[in-house]
Amino acid sequence: MAGAIGAVATAEAADLGGYKGSIKDGVPALVSQSAARFYVRADGSYAEYDTPAVVQDQRFDFLDRSIEGHWSVGGGVGYYFNKHIRADVTFEHRFETDVKGTAPGASIGLDGNAPGKLGLESQLVLINAYYDFDTRSQFTPYVGAGLGWIKHDLAAGSFSTDTHRVDVAKGEGNDFAAALMAGVAINLTGRGAAAGSGEGSGDAARNFYLDIGYRFLYLGEVASGPATVTTIGAGTPPVTISPDPIVSEIHAHEFRVGLRYDFR
Image 1 (tube, helix red, strand yellow):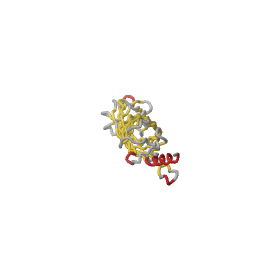
Image 2 (tube, rainbow, N blue to C red; image 1 turned 60 degrees about the horizontal axis):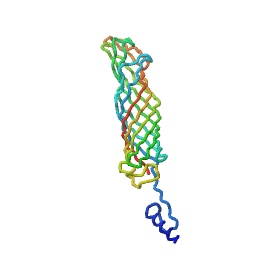
Image 3 (cartoon, rainbow, N blue to C red; image 1 turned 180 degrees about the vertical axis):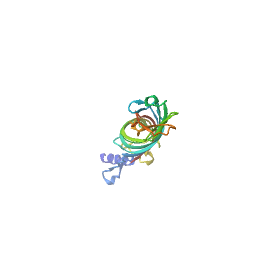
Image 4 (tube, rainbow, N blue to C red; image 1 turned 90 degrees about the vertical axis):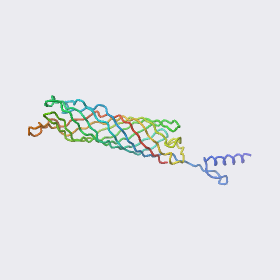
């Protein structure tokens, strides 16, 4: 009787897909459907900025400061440590946007305030860690944080009044960057096994996830080249008035959309 029960149990296990083999093979071998471990991602973002600080000669604060909203694109490679914890390294190109402000004329010897702008373009690298909440559904909320490096390129620009023009040379700089983020990953093929959980679906299409979220970015600062002032129509050479206006306190609020592909 005991032998018959054992044979039936073994046959049922084989039918359920948990094991492979037959009674005549002896002890059945466990089939391991591998979980996702590595993934790649591609992302697009739109950023709005808090009011930055723009200071000339470390003394004169620009007026009416702002950074225009703009887009960025990027990608990365990641790894699942388990069904809750994952990490990735990402790179992104942040397209050029305008840093606007008004140079305070009275403080730097002009006859009035001088509005103008500079172009800001950046490259960002981050190492990110995430916690995925296991809802056992098509939607997986997450939170995360990242640390990394940003390279800013500040294009040349000018600020002018009716009688004077302040020309600012281009500059570049590297600084520390940090991120906080939250969002949701959506399984594009419906409900399936959690990534990294060891419960593979066996369906390659289930490896695609749509990632939608918010990210706060701290992006450091960057200094321009020297600022010079020219008297319009006077025919006199420009005079250097400052070694470098500095754009600092660069903080972005981003809406992000991305696609993630898990390798199983």
